[in-house]
Image (cartoon, rainbow, N blue to C red; front, side, top):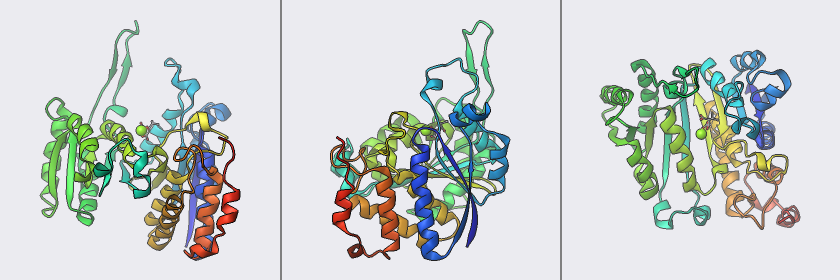
Length: 372
Ligand code: IPM
Ligand code: MG
């Protein structure tokens, strides 16, 4: 198979984690005889530094002509701490989502038994946790009218949703629920917000097409509590843009590290894959960030290319590193391996035909970091 893949490294740890995902994709190409053509593009703070624009037109153009986009992370503290900055890195990502119509953001939450101890939750709450958040990505308060009055004493962020915007993601989420445990939970704030009441009405109508799927409705405040109290009750969570942003960071706590979670964003014809973590500027350039969220995002891209065996071997490689304690500093601050070593190990795993015996454990030990 031949594919054109756009690589957007972005900011902070973005380039380091994306480099490992690219390396893993190359190992897959070699093993399965595929041909990936990579094009690097700019977005975020790095794009502002180089061109003055967080999303240069050339990036949109390349993305529109690609088969898939792999993205690292966005954000820089020099903008976070300056609320009056008019050009911000995040504008690049929001504009790209809108330009490519990436309206459905899919964030699977998986837990690994070998990492249960890392979660602040008790072991019994973590058992059988396996759900996926379908977050609407191009509407709501993120994209409504924004206003600041002249005196700078009043600000407005408008939240708008149309039935069409709700329907199109609802259908995707219901289809996913049909393939999973057939349970869908709509998270909203219908006791307060008009947009949430529209979500409920539209989802009730869409549900009629999927009689096998059991539908539940939860207010977002209660959902935030339930994700911690009883996360195994969820299968597919469907929600609007901002609630999905907040709940997906909360849910990452279940897996033990934010660095582990991948995501995919689908539109009408184009898809983008990115780890859910941010740019983690404190770790940038140190080769200590966790590349697994990025590597698992590459696996989601291979699923999207309809290459399930290739995606499965990446996931097996990730589980193999975790089970053998070949982990980065976020997971084990004392006995940790470098970002690049984890990428290399997963490539070795792929090349070894899933045969652990070929991988020399002594060599791996030597690559353990000695910096504490
Ligand atoms: C995410 C991020 C983004 C969002 C930021 C970087 C704009 O937090 O993808 O979850 O809020 O959507
Ligand atoms: Mg977020």
